[in-house]
Image (cartoon, rainbow, N blue to C red):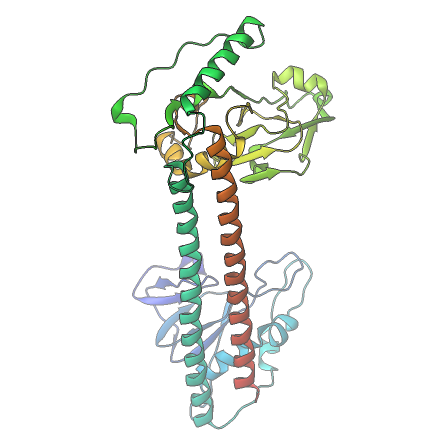
Length: 407
């Protein structure tokens, strides 16, 4: 029994890819190790992997060792290659049972295998090893290309928020004027009692500024230029608050893009009132505040309420939501690091209000967003091509392996 094994010097073959250890060995030599139970169970036939093992080893009770009777006739490595490649047809197909699907050892013994001379078996194994080595080199290179594209996206965003991505136009209205417009608009809304007057945010200290920005740009705090609010959750034990018509998004539904799909769950008007949540309008930038999805973003394409794990950053006439979206994506790792709680990250609204924003002129915001969209689309297309090549490489390897084993 695997759970009763006493750790020791000998490898213990188990269902997983990594070996455990045991203080005794049961077998010695080369062997193919085959699980005798389904990987998923519950009436479903499946087998994630079989193993090749050599030397002295122990074996879990739900696996069996298939050992050549005569090593001058059969190479265990060749046998492993054949059974691994034909696992679905030769092993999985022989499983049976309803709740507990299993593979009888007698069914394994009934498998017919093509058996060329030993020398040819060895040559086949060596040829397959060479194919896999070449395949790994290609996949490593493709993986490097994926990493390069990931880094390229980050560099695009870094250049954008530092004012290095698009040309500057001296005729653009400076961002300082935007702050004046925003201040005047806020004062009007306070006077109309549409928003509450808030305490001024602390001035920005020189040591807080992370990099230089171009002339015409300005550093400001996010709360100075953007109004925000969080959502809420109606009482779960009151059925009258749920299965209504009001869209109610949860943080897991944020997708780092445009939110165009209806929410999975909806609440009633009474539920909306009970939770004190707001209905955010189309164009609102949503950000997940805590948990595994902390920092996830989404731009609403329809009016929706949210739960309390989401904060809405309201759209205004002087800051493009898409620019703010890209800006916060670039700073997401920092926001998560800064707000890590005892058990999970927790990005508070206070933190967001104090967060520094490098604000360009409005006309330049449009140019920046247009350029980022263009470059990101190119990166997406390149990545799609690379991932297709990864799939083609794997498919070609499987064809080559089958041809080698079944000439």
